[in-house]
Length: 310
Image 1 (cartoon, rainbow, N blue to C red):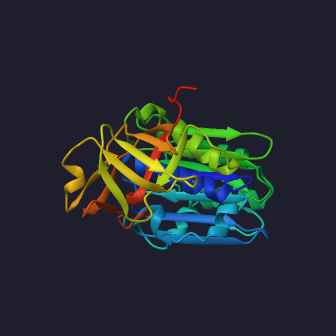
Image 2: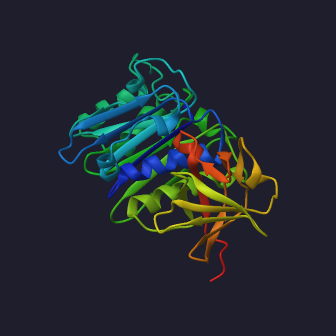
Image 3: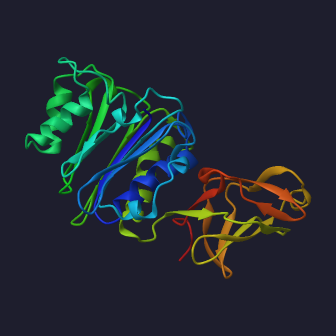
């Protein structure tokens, strides 16, 4: 498995969704295929959504799940062994266990490591102690684990074997209202060393519903694409794209699928510079209109705001 993330606090469901969608947009590798999301709802009951292909956009996540206070997700390439919930076990009133690499790998007693952590939570052990104990006993097993409990406690870690990988990343956030941890491997991106922190920052902003340096923009309907002196994405107050401008004179007249947002393009709202895009966007072009593609990651952009002069 390529990425695992868990969170507790306000809109934890939105946070884990943002982390995995951000990985699909920023990264390349075994991502955007199988995905499992799990939450504990307001009554502490466990719910799962799974998909074998298409990543987070194919999970059909109910809007109410974004407000869940305990949530986790795991994702990687397509077509993984069934049942997919084996990669993210949980229990009502108790907690969830996700991870990366092979968190379901059998331990010395034959029990999957993620289930072994969940069993320790059921016995009253804290999530960090449970993970430390399981991983210490299986130092050369190819697994990283994250556990989050119904009361919001969180623990995470990699086996010694995974910790030696040069392509693995990890990040966490903690404050008085929430907790977040993510682990990933085999996701390659520009400035890959910063990927985990970028994803954590993005997820954390969604958990707290506040604007940060990384934000999602969406092409939700057909919009005009016009010739202009510079590339620019115009958005409304919801982050929906309302107009595109391209300095490439060929793009507005195309009648085929093509790149309509070029890396580094400006983002403006009512003329005000908000930031610059960090990912590109394809769309179906015809008669001066750019229409969105179907998948969530195909019609979503990431914008960075940290380089805007203030």
